[in-house]
Amino acid sequence: MRIPFALASLMAAVTTLAATGQALAQDFKPRIVRFGYGLVDDSNQGRAARFFAKEVEKATGGKMKVRAIGNAALGSDTQMQQALIGGAQEMMVGSTATLVGLSPEMAVWDTPFLFSNTKEADAVLDGPVGEKVKATLEPKGMVGLVYWENGFRNLTNNKRPIARLEDLADVKLRVMQNNVFLDSFKALGANAVPLPFSELFTALETRAVDGQENPFNTVLSSKFYEVQKYLTVSNHVYSPWIVTVSKKWWDTLSPAEKKVLQDAAIKSREFERKDTREEAAKALADIKTKGMQVNELPAAEASRMRDKLTAVNAGIAKTVGQGIWDEVQAAVKQARAAK
Ligand code: TK8
Image (cartoon, rainbow, N blue to C red):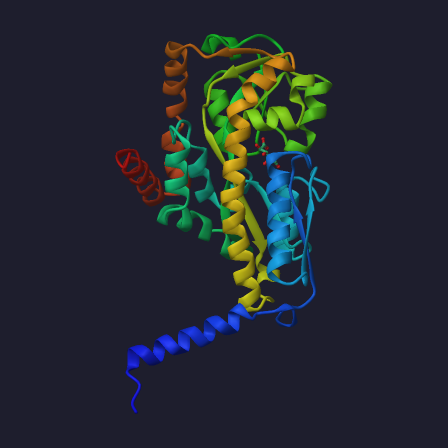
């Protein structure tokens, strides 16, 4: 009897599926994966890193052990990137913003007011242009797996509530090590100082800087409320995190091992975004309870800020290339229309 082609390929697929379904412990080599991140263990970043670790261990019958190592114990974002490139560390998660020195295209996510909500962010980051930007890491020695949510960034400082644009004038503000952030806050008139996140708490505590900007979640988990008095809700930019793997190490993995990491990364993305959003929704109340004075940037001032910040857009388009810039703008438009 001749088996029709379609049926034959279906049978082949089922056999393969059964085989991968049985991809059991013996198919995986014992491996230790150091997965570094910058925030404290008790943070949205830490919780998601541990979730990822568990998924990988489960899927490999405990053969691949992921050590989630927080607190920048393995180094700042840029130091860990170098360790991944050199093959001295396997994985990390950190801000896309700190990758701009390696992959200029990453700067597109630093565009002020690019996304107006998380739905738009998810659609664009997980869509074709998000993938394209992620892929620019590979020739640089890193493999991007997924984007996680850091979140919408807000201002904190010790001088005064930011009620008008001019209130930023003499504020020494820590920014991420990235020219878009530096230019943005210079454009707003602040005295912008680039610093790695790992040095930020001490810099605030010793008053080496007056302020910083990060999502509510990080203000809470990093206890910035202990060293910062004012929080101004500005939502000036949406900040993604990205989970990356050392390309050197990735190339030593079997297809089954790569699949385990990719699948676990996608599951971790769902977990992380849900967890981060739940935390963000109640964070402002928590921040007030911790004693911070919170103000909303008045709408008129927000639009003045927006005008000043969009002045940096031309520079971003130049950095990332007009093609990527246009694709991202089109994807945002599409996501906005999809409501
Ligand atoms: C954590 C950083 C942090 C970022 C920053 O390593 O540096 O302000 O928001 O999340 O990547």
